[in-house]
Length: 359
Image (tube, rainbow, N blue to C red; front, top):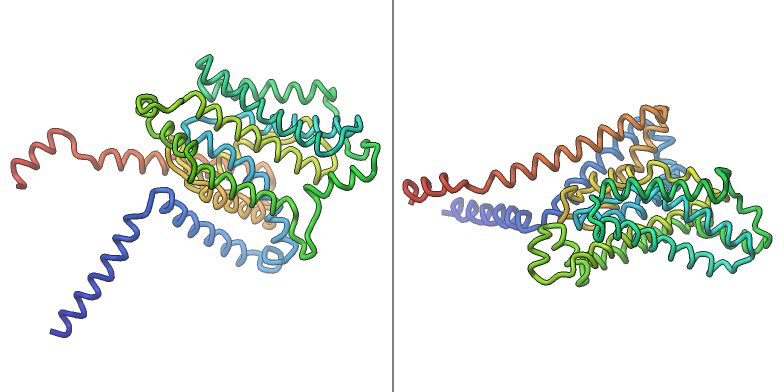
């Protein structure tokens, strides 16, 4: 009798655990599974290179590396969730860095230079949205084209040469600008890491808790249904592209500040790495699923992979091969799950047979 009661209690506990997990959202489940992979990657490189990987300096470098993945990835998350994409983020980032340094060279106050740069980032998003939503160009082609436009502008403005912050006439402005991306707190934590974290939290709240966030999910899940339910689809998706452009501009300011120079080739390939980070973290490439936490976890995974491969002396060319394969495998895994979930619903024929023989 006692055993029966014990088993009953154990069954209830087990069922409650299963029920709790099954009640979690898809994004939360993906965040949990991605966290396990993140922990596994951390342990692998900690075992392979314990002295170097676990050192305080390397941890600070690791956090510094994920700033770009996090900021650009969070912006791209808005595009991916609403069913779009943005391949122009890296080029927009380079253009932003050049514009802010050129304005500071002309004696423009720092806050105005940053404000203009952020506005320009939003304008790049509006341009992407115009081509996609108004002219009807598919996101891949539209943002690939604007990538060339922004990269070409960045090169044309400075004739292909880098612009150094040492050319800013005021030493005070030079120092203030450098602190944005290169400044550190007394413990060694970079300002840019805190900026990236705060920015991710703000975007996470906007995506998960606001009306425009819910409309973005609706557009990504079913565009036609979103239109029929009265959502202004054009405005919603334009907003997503503006967030992506704004994120690229913020990243451009921070990277230019840290490197003390604006390069027209900066940010090349960053958009693909940010997309890889978002997908690795659990953002659905098909749209409609994912939260900012997924992107942050994915950014950490990308940072650990990059950092660990550098420590074990894998050259940059092979790193490109490895990261490309990881991205393809992550997308293939998502597609497999998507097909599996769709196939789990019984076909009409199977439903009729089931009703006849399994009443």
